[in-house]
Length: 325
Image (cartoon, rainbow, N blue to C red):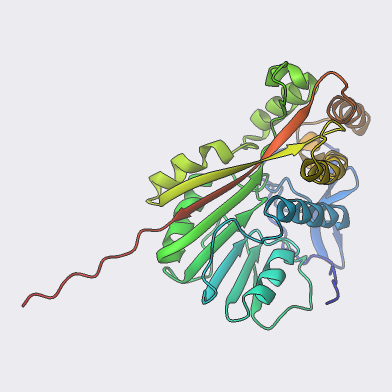
């Protein structure tokens, strides 16, 4: 199946905050977008994840890594072979939806994303909705057997509202899975506190997150939000992702290779809108990233890693009232 990456077709929206001259509003034959350090972002200015070719490579690299974490599976959730309705929130290029369509040919998979970057050639049981996932989804309440969210940090400001909407769209007994790679690095040997492991990264990212008013490490709060929304059987699975060159276990070394690739892609492309939105000139941006990548990838004093977090939950089944005799 060939992958075709069309130019995104977006509608200009009013800016939600003031940006410096680093960020440029641009229009081409694909529509309106914001450009920051040479990368394209949604024109609303609210999405800190680019949609250009570099980010699509980043999405596919993360997809490969998460499949390695799941030993080749596409979900941590055990799904029935007879599942019928699946909704993929933040579908991106649609690679997960397409692979799920092949694995579950009897299911209808609907991907929702704000950017139109999906493959034009898709299986017959896949369709896409181009929309802001923080707005009401064009899906009936009680429709979905399974709602899947993955790698949408950087595009969500109101996580509790998103979780509550997922709960409404699920059938009674329906399943939800939320997967994110945490942004906080840790030291495997515990010699360094998180703040001391990569101080330039920790300090900078905290200040940027505060400035743009977005949570870039939401996974620890998922269980609380899920319980508040009425979900049950909430569980989290953590998978260790080594950074640098310290892992010796073959399984971890395979992950480490993919993570190192992601570090270069993330800090070279994915994070540019955050820095630009905070007013950093490109020279300062490049200097900061060089320091961060050196601390993470070139450290011989620590064993840095991050965690992939797979969060699963179920919407309670609706008990049918017994008939009075």
